[in-house]
Image 1: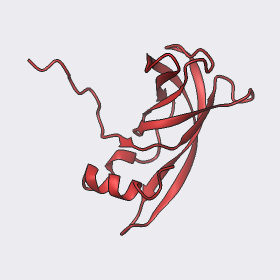
Image 2: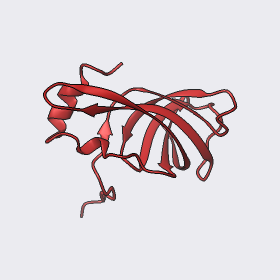
Image 3: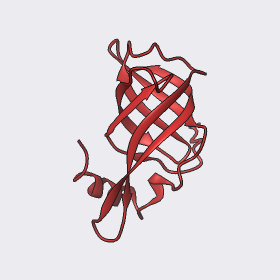
Length: 129
């Protein structure tokens, strides 16, 4: 029996791009690195000591998402979203992975902009930092 059950309702866009976050956006912002994103949620990594994040914690984040156009054209769409941390996983003693659900979804589905994951990764190879 397959132990892994996919519960996601939409494909996620996997990319590595900075994300800034804080519980209170008027405080000092911490920086992480995006892992993947959908219209309703995102996962990113950050230092294990950053804000001592925990499930249920409210947070606000600022990030950019590639928006693909015709051919190889793309733009970066920037967003600020409030949300709730739904999971915190320890990657190692220095790094944690945070999953956050947005209070308001993005206006598009980032992982469903291209015909295939291979096409998406080819396009992203030019924009990943």
